[in-house]
Every structure is written in structure tokens, then in C-alpha cells.
Image (tube, rainbow, N blue to C red; front, side, top):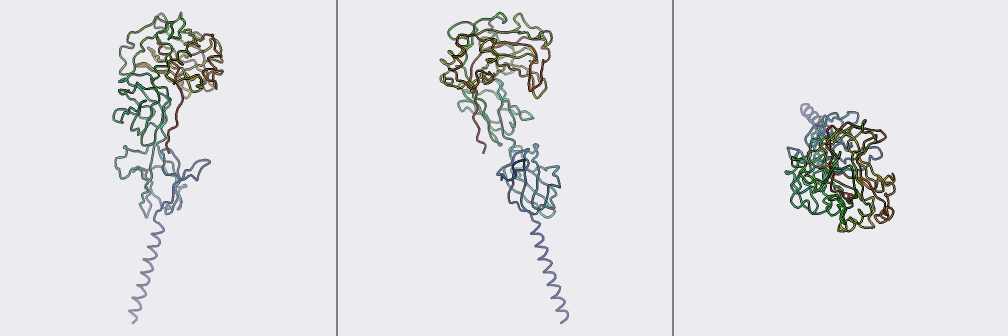
Length: 435
């Protein structure tokens, strides 16, 4: 009888221990209720997808003994233990995490895995790169077959580039650079025919460029000669009109316009920011009212009298025999009037001198919104204000302010610069639905 009591007592203790252990294991199992953003001013927005570089908060239970967190199968190193409790984990999704086709094991794609002392839990959620953005295009009048560069941010995992007219280039026909700021692509057949914007689309979303591509009908200086279809007036500081191939080798990048002119007029020479300080190295005069007449007549409705000038820009194509490291391009719709002036230099980036290099020709864009008395006005209002006053284009050396700092640049040795295809183009950008 005593033996039976002993056995019964121990069976009860064993059963209680099993129940207790089971209860403990249930309590220690990982569960995820939701994932929220974790940033200043917003800690409550629930996320249905997370992006690289984003700080997130995982809410749930069973996190106290977390040993590792993985995103898309890659260990997230440096998760701060002070940001782990039993009910939440806070961490920043590393920008180095692979996304999309970069993830080799497709079962790990779009997952966050939480490994604790007691559990190994996988939570499915789309993991994306930063939202793509396009900031510029190297040449906006390139011909089919020529190579251009699309500049921007987060150009990672891009699956297609779409040119105006819906002409698509798939991912195997273009390349991304290592910091995902540049896509190099050849203009496809038909991709140079329709005016508009190009777009990129990939695993992390999409983006549009400005709508300034292929605006052939908007050219107002083509042959650099006075005539009904050319707003050019005169110059004593440019070479004669040239048409020969330049450069001889473009390495697949865009070649020269049909007609172009260059400076210094007498051939290559040093452009020195000290010796040439406050000097114009090249310039020409133009008829500003005639410029508007030509564009309004020929742009096929792209630009109208009621078009806001804030949504327009001056563009031209240019090539230099050495990197551009000093001087500015300046456009005056009314000569010597600072309120109708726009100045552009592209060799300063983030406070550093970054030479603009050339293999083929590039396009330079000068937004009209940067002219004080043009901003906010329509084409008709500006045309009437300009009247019969002439305008001026120049390349000038001097001291220029960028972001509160003045720059003079670096000497351009044995250099000559060439320009052509002056045009007024649309300059607005549609938002891309990345929701």
C-alpha cells in the first residue's frame, strides 16, 4: 500500500513538472504582434514593409533571451541589448542587407528571423531598399544606341528602366554602380522619339525623372546663325560653327550636336581661376523674345503661353576636352540684369571640388525658377517683360558661392569647351506611387 502511495505521489509530481515546463516553454515562445517605425515624432505607425536604414520596433513576446536577429537570412550585427526586452526589440535594419534577387536562399527572402534561447521564429515581411529617386540624366537628347547615365539615390535592385513612349529596358541590359547612385543604360530603339520622362522600377519601388527627355522641338539655337528658326544674335568669342565628329571616340556615349561652337575662340588654353578671375572665356548674344516665339511655335504644345516658368528650364549640350573644375555657365534673359540671371556650376558637391569628366557630350540644365523676376510668372508674362531686350550666354571665371562657401576651382589645363542644342524644356517631376 505504501508503495502505491509513493508511486502515486511521484507520478503527480512528475505530471506537475511536465505541466510547469510546458507552461514555461509556452511563455518563452516568440510571437510577433506588429512592427512599428521608431523615429522622432513617430513611434506608432505600423509597418507592412521595412526599408534598409530604417529604425524599427518589433512588438510581441518571448524576446528576453534573444541571441540573434536576421533579415533576409543575414545576421544583424550590433543589436543593442539595452533595446531588447521581453516584449520588444528595437534595431536599425542595416543598409548592407541583401534585397530582392541578391538573396540567394529564396525561403529567407522578406523575412525577419528571431533566435532566442528557447525558440527560432520567422516573421514574413517585405524588406526593401531605400525609396529610389532620380536626380538627373547625363544627356537628355541622346540618340538610340547611345549610352546615358541616370543619377539618383537608392538605385538598387532596379528591374527595369522605361523610356518615354513606354519603351522598356530590362535589368540584364543595364548596370548599377556599387553605391547605387548611377544606372548606365543604352537608349533603346524608339526611346529617343517621344518627349517626356523616364522611370525606374524595382524591388524597392520606383521613381520618375524630370519630364525633359527628347525635347527636340524645343531647340531655339541650332545652327548659330540669324534666321527665323534660330534666336542666335552674334559673338566675337566663339569658334566658327563646327560639325565634325567630336570627340573622335565617345566610348558609346552621346556625340556632338549637328552644329556646335567652342571657346576659347583660338583653341585650347589654360582656364585659370586666378589669372582669368572675373573674365568671360566665351559668350554670345541672343534674341530673348524670339527664343520664346520659336519655342511656342515648335514645341507641339509642350510649352504654352500660360505655362509657369517655374516648370521650365534652359538646357544645352556641352563637351570639354578636360574635366570641368572652374568657372560657371551663366544665362541672362536680359543682359546685365541680375534679376533675369541664372548661374550654374556642377563641380562642387557636398563642399568638395568634384571634377565633371567627359567621354562624350553631356546636358546641362538651368532651372528658370532660379531667375528672381521669372519665378512664379507665366511664359506670356516673362515674354512681355523682356520685350525687345537682348539676352546673353557666357562662361565666366570667378568666385562663386555654393551653400554659403565661396569657390574658385582648379585650373583647367589646355582646355576648350563646346556647346550646342540650346533649348527650353519642361522641368517638373511626377510623384511615384510607392505605397
